[in-house]
Image 1 (cartoon, rainbow, N blue to C red):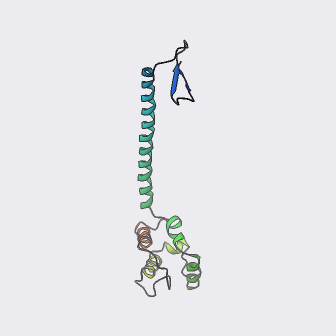
Image 2 (spheres, helix red, strand yellow):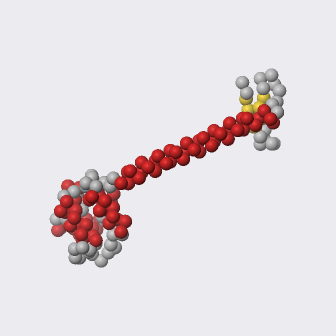
Image 3 (cartoon, rainbow, N blue to C red):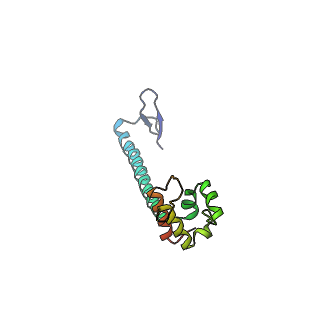
Length: 141
């Protein structure tokens, strides 16, 4: 069995053979190649895993949900202002109704006056696209 120890002065790996002799530099090279190959394998494996996670995240991003993606877009002040008008922006049952969601979308885009939230800040194009994707994706909870 080969054992390796680290020499503090040279910072190189040196091996000893069971009979006590020190291995030569040439004998160490295959071990270095194996160590390099293992590190390269782990790097490639990490890239593959990251790629899988990216694809999974892309799939996850295609599925817009109310609780995770839409509800957090509404500020507490928006909820307070709209509740007296029986518009419940944080209620999935209310917002998943196609007519209610379309009305909220129209107010947010300015298709209906006044554009919400009154005085701004208005939703960005990305936020409006996210809301549209939620509606076209079937109003997932």
